[in-house]
Image (cartoon, rainbow, N blue to C red; front, side, top):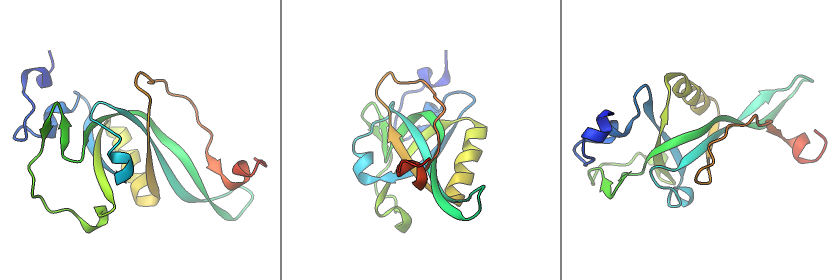
Amino acid sequence: VVQSALTAYSEKSGLSVKVPAGYRASALPVDRDMAVLMKPGDRVDVVVTVEALMAQGGRQKVTMTILQNLLVLSVGRDLGAGVGTAEGEPKSASFAEKEAISVAVNPIEFQYLALAGETGRLGVSLRSPGDIEIHPIKLADWPSLMGGG
């Protein structure tokens, strides 16, 4: 029996009761248009777009999937099961066009998210229900997009 099965979700209990043992909750900014399509319990993949130094020299933007199949714990103030957090909290200006989701990550995944967030632009893609497989995914760059890579 896990703690979250014994604790009722409420705005007073907060998000921590939803975090699986051994995991952490981490907030990610997502476009509002994407956030309205998500709900707690969904699964997402996370990509980062960075400017990379290429082996042949020069720099170019690349996008790579850094984490797959992350459990969405909350979307904005929605904790799921009809429970939200307290209203009236000020929003950061940097989130004006964004909404925050929280995802369950292990401590190493959290470090990857923190590094990627400081280095590049994060993006999130929503998975189909039941799609939990993790696959190697080649990074995306302009030569590949144009058919040369």
